[in-house]
Picture 1 (cartoon, rainbow, N blue to C red):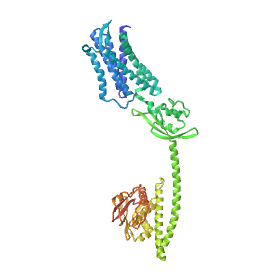
Picture 2: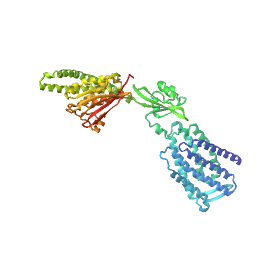
Picture 3: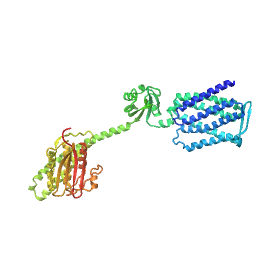
Amino acid sequence: MNSTVELILMIVSLIMTGIILLTVYGFRRERGVIYLVGLIVCRMMYSSSIILERHSDVFMTKLIFRNIQNTTQNVMVPFLILFVYHLVGRDKLLKTQWKILLFAVFVSWSLLMWLDPNFHIIYLTIELYNGHLVTTKTLYSRAFSLICYSAVVICLYYLFQYVRNIRSDYRKPGMWVLLLATLPFVLEIIKFVKPEWSSWLLPLTVYCGSTGTIMLVIILRIKFFSTVPIARNIVLDTLQESIVIVNGSGKVIDNNNRASQWFSELGYTNISGRNISEILASWPEWYKLSKSMQPGSVEIDKWLDGERKIYSVNVYPLYTLGKAQGNISLIFDITEKQRHLEQMAQLNQLKDQLFTIISHDIRSPLALQFQLVELLEADRQSFAADHQEIIEQLGDQIRNTLGMANNLLEWFRSQVEDMTLRPELLELSEVVEDCCHMLHIKSESKHISVMNKIAIGTHVYADRETVGLIIRNLLTNAIKFSELGGLIEVYAQLSGDMVIVSVRDNGVGMEEGRVRQLFNEKQLNSMAGTLGEKGAGLGLLVSRQFVQLSGGDMWAESTVQQGSVFHFTLRGGTER
């Protein structure tokens, strides 16, 4: 080949390599690409030194350029190792000191080559033959070359495994890129085996810039660096959820194996490249969400083998440069979960019905017994002393049981999500007076004075039944823990737009630790009263829940042997 034509072709190939370098540099932030940039820089220096060597006539000048070639070849190896190491998806990256050590080994060997006239480790002979520089390497140099070639072979193996495991549409072009990338390496192997062929093989290694351009076209066409399909099949295809990725024009550009199986059951053997308007025709809500490229979630169903399957589809937009360029749909099978929820809903409904029936059937006869006992208590003076004691004990038992049944039913009502209170404007002193009247027999039996100190005209906006239940429970507790002849006071004060209602007694009181545990929902227990009265501990819990449902709060203060005071807040003033 004419030397001028050869020079032109080599310069063109060098320019192509420069274009490759500039293009790849734009992807330098992607995994491992920065080391690929270093490798291409070395390749350009290698090609340039070949051109300069072939067009130089001075022995020492040719030797300098030959040393540059060998130096850049040596440095390419650590760049290739690091590129492959990062590309294949290693989570544990090499520390900086290990990288420096790796380069130091190859740089040190290259330094020996430049100092070879003193050490005679690299070359046995160096001579000019027909204008070409011919060298014979030592055994040490050939051994080092074999180590370098072995490292390159291992890297090519890992690249082959990497390309083999990426998604199918990347696999074929990836193999072509890998095949073209091995061409310079094959030429170097031939030069190593047949050093006498080096004179005409050197230009061919420069021409590999054109094959590099073909590699670049393939890489850009499949957007290899932008997509970064690292271990894609290991990640996506291992997931049990179906994943479908759609681009901005509404076409499926990717999916995992689970999604392929899922759609194949619907008759779509291959969904890649299909428009979502076709494959999502049965689910307009899903199609609308995917088309809008907005985040959201929908539930869909389909029939498989005569069984209805229910799925939850989560749609997420995919952003590039701050703009939505498509979306990803994740499909979860929630059939079993939905069945369990339906069963739980049915059981809860049955439980609610049974609870209501049982509570009503218990409370109604107890209320009737309570009325009969009150008639007996009103006329107990006409009975003998032993009968009066029986009537008194019977009245206490029925009152406690009725109170517990009322609290149980009201607690159940408070747990129902659709329970609604019916607030109205109440005269608070009247509600308290009614409660005191209902409990007068219990308080009189312990000779306890219950004083209603709420001023007439104090209004609250609340549900009458709820307020009555709260006050009755607090008064019942105050009577229970007061000694014979004790005093209970009920008073209220305005605080902003709230009314603070307080029930104070001078009974046995409580320790500070006991006060902190009063409203603990996990501990339903009650201490015995001053006369051994028993309770379930549910009244205070129910009262606090209804206070909170009414928009207020409840708290307590107490001192041992000095009594207790319970406070709760209600909305006051006018109707809202």
